[in-house]
Amino acid sequence: MRARLALLKSGIGVELREILLKDKPPEMIAISNKGTVPVLQLADGKVIDESTEVIQWALAQHDPDNWCTADPELSQQLIEENDGSFKTALDRYKYFTRHPEHPQEYYRAQGEMFIKKLEALLALQEGKGLVRPSTSLADIAIFPFVRQFAGVDAEWFANAGYPLVCQWLYDHLNAPEFLRIMIKYPLWLTRRMRYVERWHEPGSD
Image 1 (cartoon, rainbow, N blue to C red):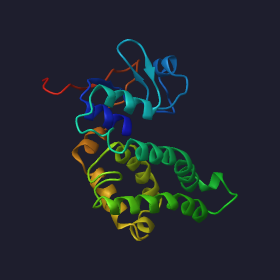
Image 2 (image 1 turned 120 degrees about the vertical axis):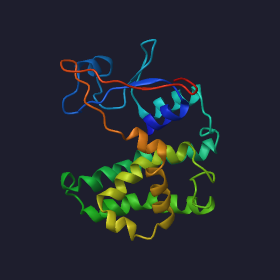
Image 3 (image 1 turned 90 degrees about the vertical axis):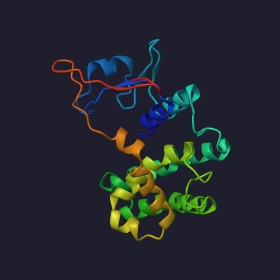
């Protein structure tokens, strides 16, 4: 999600290929054997297969809303915590049966520490962003994971005492850009079809 959002915001033309991870196309494995998405192959053949690197590459080409210049040090710290300890807690919270060492509530409490931090940061920015009172790189990189955390037990999350995080998440999930990148396309299958969604650069038809 965050890689697609950065590509869309940058205005760079791309081809999207919808796949099933349980039935990975050989073309995907041929350029990236890690076997997960996103995988971005550039026109010169270079492959970028980490979402944070896709984001950095896209916004280095064009960053119209200055996402990357908003408190880069704090943004990097938050993204690292999100991708590290929070994602670990999130995965164990979602799939707690695979981690029977602790009950599900234990893993939720671990993830909740990060949610508390986000609530405090939003309070400093009128609830509109994590590092400034508008969307920036930190928001785009983090909210998809908060979406997953909230989705494990939506009723609990809605009543857990994080009104700013809830509103911030709602705003991002209902933003036109998010709704566009979440459109489902027919699967791209070599044997049966090739479906391409093209995103054009600003000003093109």
